Length: 427
Image (tube, rainbow, N blue to C red; front, side):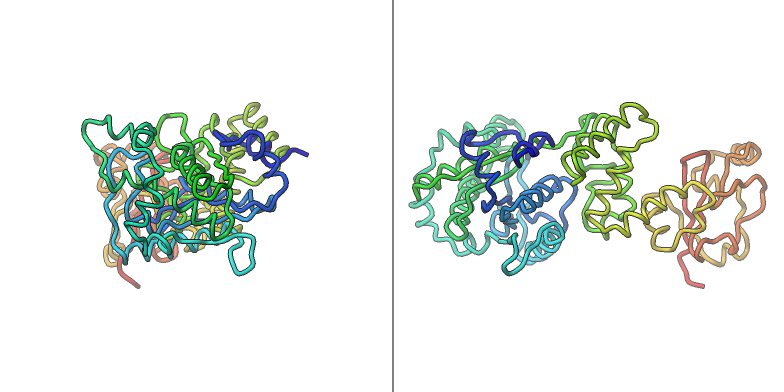
């Protein structure tokens, strides 16, 4: 049976590690305390954080003790790694709300609690009461500025012409190293994990523990998740894909994964899901043989939606995806239908307007589904207009009786162009 590091390598989750000799055996033996840090820049994590959340869970299932570290202190500064400009500094109240939000999300991935295999920590506990003189004496004097400016995260900003690097951000590396030292002292933490852009910060922490405590610590990074088209992973036209269902509906979340390119589906199954190796390889082969069936993408979308939002939401999202462009849309329950329509363009109408009747030709033009009255009539004659999934070939006006759940009328032109009429007042 392959060891943990072998499995991580097969999944594409190993980029660099500080010790090729000792660390593999330690990982296979279990019982290591390790951590990943998450800065609370918002009150929800997004899919860009999922690789590291899933990685912590893999270590937990392998018998290690992960620490999910919320950066309540470092979040006040901002990590320059991978950033082209300085983050806005957050206030205490906003940071507190953000810490609470992401802490609850972390608890869905890890078994956090008294005596549990995982822990939740916050570096504000030690950074918030830091003594500046003591910090400079005990930590700052051990760092070489010459070495720090050679780090990729710092050098890229120093060489940029449009945005400089503030001293506040420059100090982030020291604070992250101090985090590692504190976690080592408090919980005997020996391993820090992170994305490949964190390598410089991680190695400084490893070195600080060696210098201050004479102890061996380790670092391991995973490759950053990239998309084949060069766009940032986790970003859509409407922004981040969040883990909070109030920000990104489970249906939209499901669709994000379902739209994965064939060239990326196998990699995402390996990195993000907890499916067995044999099952993933079967799905990869199925995609190679019959890409039109999108078996890998459907499995990926289900697994990730179930992981983040629960099995019931994953099944509802699948049901909505299966019938959204058919007559079966009328059978969706209100919450599922609302989630499925969340990203569709919409127009508000009053109940009084519907009681009088809305001419379908005028509606097609005002919603942008047709450019003119003549085009609208041509589309109707060609059978290209659908109302609630049913072909609409006549000029009968839309009325209250056409509402789904008393609230929505779903218009469609052709196969995919949708527009939703939403009643804004109650019955």
